[in-house]
Amino acid sequence: MSAKKSDTPAEPQEPVANIDWAVLLSVEDIKSLASFFDVLIEMDFEAKRNEQRMKDEKTTSENNTSN
View 1 (cartoon, rainbow, N blue to C red):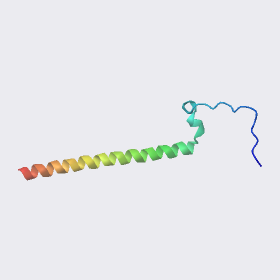
View 2: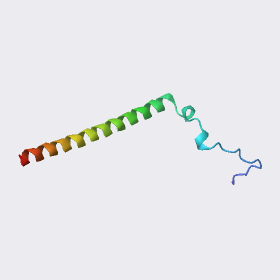
View 3: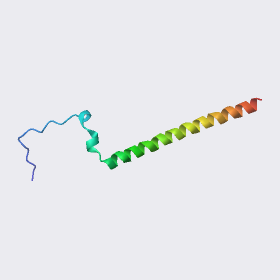
View 4: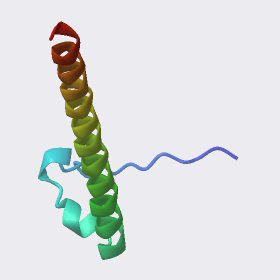
């Protein structure tokens, strides 16, 4: 059986930029996304703290060896 084409034209689709995303996502989905981004932000902060700690340790060890 083949699908029969409709004679009526398809309704024009709304551009993605104009879609109200809050309507498409449930409250649970939004909370889940917020939690996900919170974790990413915390990971980024931790990486930056580690980089700074490594820089500080390197500077301290260079200063100790040069004295």
